[in-house]
Length: 83
Length: 139
Image (cartoon, rainbow over all chains, first blue to last red; front, side):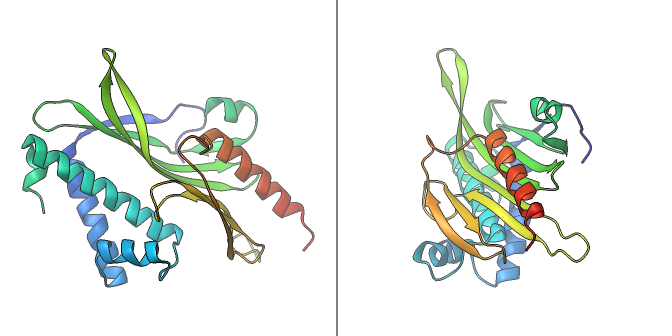
């Protein structure tokens, strides 16, 4: 909790840097729950898995990762070379 | 956020905007807002918000594509951690609101749309109010 009155700070990073970071987070969650992100998304959508705060965050970050990878494929930027 | 601080709702926050630029073109692609907000009432709100950008009328339009606002009362002394309210959209494309009973059980979902999704400042005020009510409950 660094800030008391300031507006949120802003940092700049490349799509590739964020893709790498999301990859680490998503992989950690997949190991923790012993299933792929796609499988967990299906489980939640069908009601077989409860949507907890942690799972919701996981799937939100996973969706962002998918969008950023798609952007890399469309533009040929370095995001397309990541996993 | 400074308004909520001046009004005595928010004590501190560590929110960060991360602006993502295309590696090749340098174009702004997405914005991620994340971090935690601490209210004077004791409530905490964890924020994750993804926004996409697109060119419009010579400028850049920012559209939110994912929300998660998770509010809870942290464990203090003998009081255990208590979830207060959560807005997110992991199942289905539209956001929804989770309500919790005093035992922390997720008891109700209210479907929302991107149009009816409350702003972050409204969620922070709601969380602060729920925390104050929870603390004043003699249960």
